[in-house]
Image (cartoon, rainbow, N blue to C red; front, side):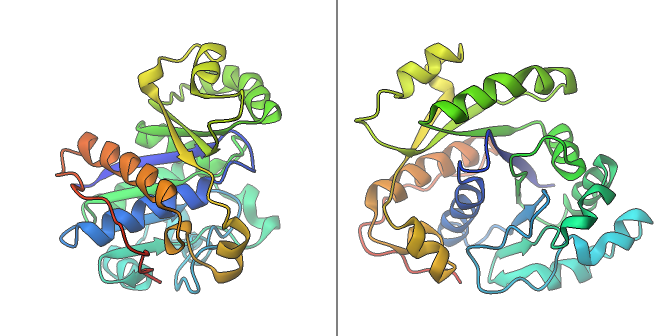
Length: 258
């Protein structure tokens, strides 16, 4: 049975897809014996940092609606390379409202025995059936923030809705982090009434535009601090899943999976 983790952004500019895929890549590269699935559970394809994804949630919608999912066939369609798998999201904006929480729960329930780790990118829109379904079903949820007043304020405004839905976040990741910004981990923790041990950070890379252009994660570039931070979060995930952690830090340029 797999361990599942959801990553949800407080805003559309927090880099949730980048964080989720980077964690999956670094674990898949270091733990070849594990089968890892990344699922886009929101209203977009979620495939910005890969050059191909063979299967998507939109492509299996009828199977989800009728609860007739062929797990083995889906696995074959999701394989990116070796032990890393990816299921894209919804490509048609007009179809987003046609997905409901029970469909996300059924998908995850169907796939739980096929993978060791399932990481879901739930985007940033809580008014989305797939995102809500994944966050409710999984429970092990990470919230992605950034050092911007608009993003912190949006989280504060949406938090009552999270509470009403029973959605809790066990950890918070401040993405695109710089030590010089006054919105540091201490300030964010104090403002949002969070214990400091719940807060982690991912350093700003400087290669964000290049990564989008190349359809690769930031692990592909010379950004050691970013890679180290991603490894720390990956180890956090592995520890919670009771899987041996990654015990080394990469010193050379990342060799991309895709």
